[in-house]
Length: 110
Length: 116
Image 1 (tube, each protein chain N blue to C red):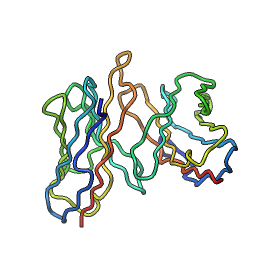
Image 2 (tube, each protein chain N blue to C red):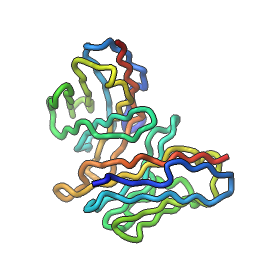
Image 3 (cartoon, one colour):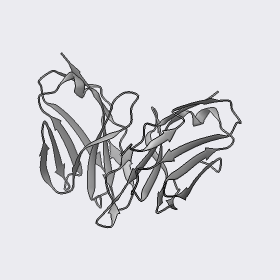
């Protein structure tokens, strides 16, 4: 079992819809959770971090964490073609290291 | 700040040659991470430094790989000899400290390495 698992996609959604990206992790001791966005040919950039159970909203983005289910998700409201990218889930087990999933490719079509 | 700087951006070399990748972290950051990204394996941590000291090199694939951080503003990742399976994008990232642990990691633009 991989430490951080994501569906590779592609996840295709129409413009204006809600995109839902999911991530599961194996270590119950994980403390911090991050979503990075990576455009093709570019480097990952942080878009959201979440540390406690529940929802965290930032503009069109909402991160959701459920530690009991070892599940973290990212919702993108009013999806735009510019949101088309690969979204990487990363988990910190209270060390200095981030463990990344392999990413979900999101395609938003007009 | 200019962000994390990496050089070269692209490197094409022949099998058996030595390759050196360079990274300048964001000023004031005390953590530096080297990652490798491939389609098959995703983003893998190779090694990381804290205050110029290597902390965890368990991700370094073989003895052919080595990394140094001689000062707070410079790090190198060296592959000697290089092999075709080393072809990948190599990212350097840096972060500061928040509450005694690493904070948000900021990635450089990456070096795309092709070994023929």
